[in-house]
Image 1 (cartoon, rainbow, N blue to C red):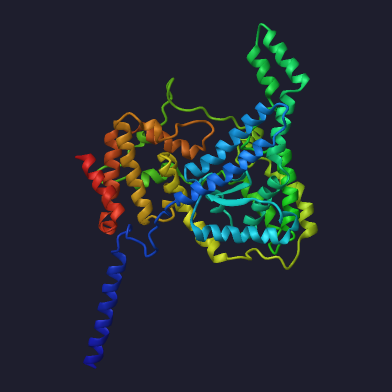
Image 2 (image 1 turned 120 degrees about the horizontal axis):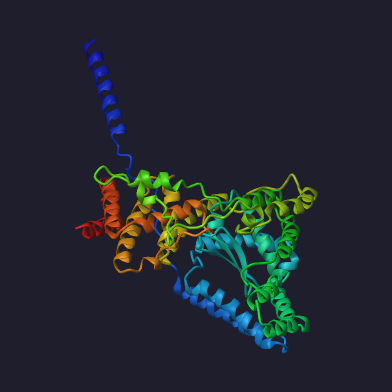
Length: 466
């Protein structure tokens, strides 16, 4: 009996100690998930690819019409500069597993659509956090990480790839260039330009009115082109194994993809409220003087829609819904290539966009992306460390009067939660950045003290506060 009692007491005592250990684990303890390590860009590969596409550009320019040749060359040069910049700034993601996965998805589309067999194009992941995908010229299609990480399945990826392949196949960019050059050199437009030049008043207003609707942009397709690309995308996708109904869910997602759920004020107040250095509400107060603050856009649905990364989505849904209903099949599946890899890349890309914004010295955007993810993963070593190195960077930038090179400024076209973060940055002094960094990192030092990047950021914060 005594032995049984002693055993029971031992079990209860052990359980009690276990409960103490469980509930005494600090809230910022390191999770058991692997620490994110950014992929190292393959510079040699980027240079090789850049030269390959430059050769294609040179051949394309050599074949432009003789008439108005100079104008054609200037626009194609502008387009090529944009393509080249993607490689020069290491925006193209060179991770082999990621590229192999994207190639496998693209191969599914090509295999199912013979009309694409003899067309040379290349698809790459872009490290940009902007939720977009685009055909940028020279057969190059970019799928931004900022878009991929928000998708739900491979079928949505396939629809977007089909949409951009449609832009490529239908030569929307090239046709827009041709139309622009011909229109600007037409007798009617040239006559109007001469009349404006000879007028005495309101020249600028008249010129703006004339070029409105004629201005060429190599980075955006017209709304007519979007509709045409959607239709062809449905035709391409319905031949594949993927679920064509996901085209509608993709367009619905794109309609609200610019909306971010980060409550900036609450998040800042939560993570920067150390006992020794409490959060100050004035840090997020908006200045309203002549040079302070920022204008608010009026509630105007057409204007708000035009500012979206993907405008007219509701109209596009109505246009393609009949086609999708006609082609929908029971056998179609949402994920047909590698669902596991899809999920892995979504997680990886959440971090890669943070790192790339930091590499581009856009600390404010990297800060915003980090806060958005930190609210979900409060103990993540990479995220915690990045907050510290950004604050340290802001300290040095402001001390050298170069803060504007590392942060955006509040503006009406930014989301309100991003504007609040930008205002927070503008309201702080060097000593604020230093103290915030030190006290924030200090709270994590017991858990992350052995993490080398964290130690580096923490040691820097200690130095700048002394």
